[in-house]
Amino acid sequence: MLPTKRLIQLVATPEDHRIAQLAAAAIALSLLDAAIPLPLPGVKPGLANIVTMIVLARHGWLAAAWVSGLRVFAGGLLLGYFFSPGFFMSLTGALFSLAALALASRLPGRWFGPVSWSIMAAFAHIGGQLVLARLWLIPHNGLFLMVPFFAVAALTFGIINGLLAARLLEELPANAAEVKNA
Image (tube, rainbow, N blue to C red; front, side, top):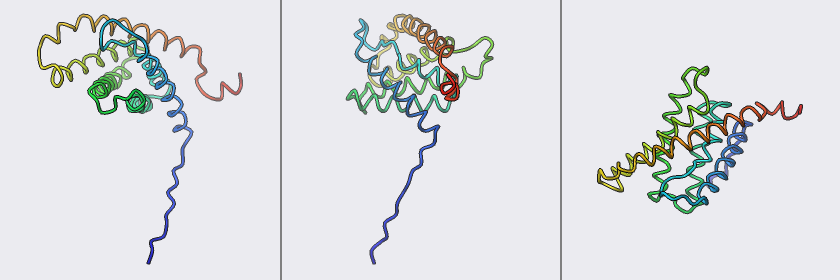
């Protein structure tokens, strides 16, 4: 007797569509990021983190984690470094950054917001990458001589990305109903 065919149907919710759209925006910015030449290897502006800060502020940490995770995996595939050391560096940075954002998003909103979140995430991201690089790729403490350069980059890009996210949060409608009424 032949087995009957089963149809598996996945139903995408509006939340799934929103996550996909936001992840696509983050992936596009990640691709743009990869095209920007910078003088120090491993230093990138982290433009996709602007989307992550907006998602965190509007939709919460879980949605931000989905967008960030999808960005890392799709970026790895599209840029051709999936499962390479660069992919694992990106994944580790994203995981450390998400851990920092989980804590940062619980801080009082009166004093903390996209700019402070972005700075904390940038430092966590580079910290995670340095730990992985030290444990796996460059087993020498000389690696930590680069910390001041990476710290300046994390602070600079963390501030810039946080300011851009804060500005976009002010200008973008909070939900689709506002878009329809505009």
